Length: 465
Image (cartoon, rainbow, N blue to C red; front, side, top):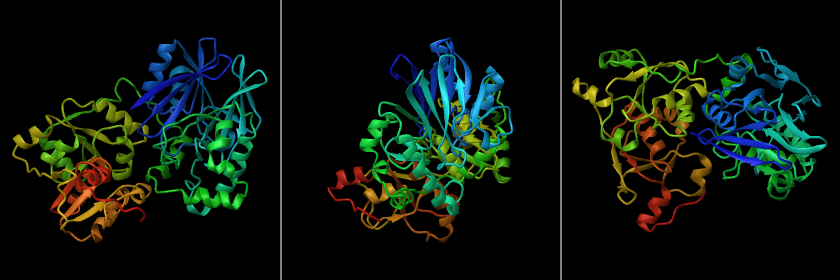
């Protein structure tokens, strides 16, 4: 789920980015030169961070949060508990656990290096960027959810009624950051794949000079035009974003790493009773396995890098969860992804998996899986990708409903023969399972996406909404 990339930010300062490809975020490990380290925007899942610090022979002395994160739970409180790290965060964030509250211009002596707090509201009210200095030289700036590569983070997470106000604050914050020396490295938290940011792209770090040249928002000098451009780029986001900031304010519960990834083994009879009582059966097996046979009413969310996002988007936060997986799947990875977004009601997993369920004489279902050239033109095509994906190119005549909105829309959607499609097939199978739960039948899932269909048929995709 995570990867690390080390880069020297000039003058020998070593900064290691630990990237969560699933949530689209980066945290940063800064070697302070004395065997200790600063960690900026750490996630609750600290496994990759621990691996990076152990490899570098470092101990974490400081943990800094740029803002009250909405898309993941912070690991700062865990680091304070486990490592005795000093937590650095905005004083106006009113965190309810021990931390050093910082305001505009406050400096922290890191033992040679210095960290200066810059007030950069916009993504959130209390947002800080942290300028890393070596003497009088600006080495880099941790911009969190302010300036990001090619854009700026969204400003509507505190409600649509405040989105414009915060976009205007974001305008001022970006202009302030863009006045830093051009060689200053830019280390954002949010990047491609994050629902907190707008643009796709592979680059996760940059420099002030590069952003001045390539970031379209920095080229807009009129505040109103900036606001229109930023707000016009925002799409939907998972509902758990609305509750995690407050959990981060209180401080997430400290976890025991030795037991967090362990799931209880549940017999078929227990799983049946839990399901009848309202537990959600989350089937994390690959798409072909779910298509071949699954428990009726189970929800397909294949275990992959993006698992946490769709788990938090599609499963109600108060619902008990029972996992159905394959023996070779790493369910500890599943548990940690869930904990990273505050999903903690994992009751256990079906012991023996789907084979045990079928062997016990319990009912099973299947879903037809077809290739790009096998779509029956008489069927409705339902494209459940995000809006920007759909407008880039889709099958002519396709109906569009985002996956995150499908559960609510299913009740009004006519039950007719339907092909579900996304970019590869994972989200489409999730959509099929949602429709099946709502009583729809005769569902088919496309293994592939619109580009595969165009290549197989020689037909052109339709562009636009």
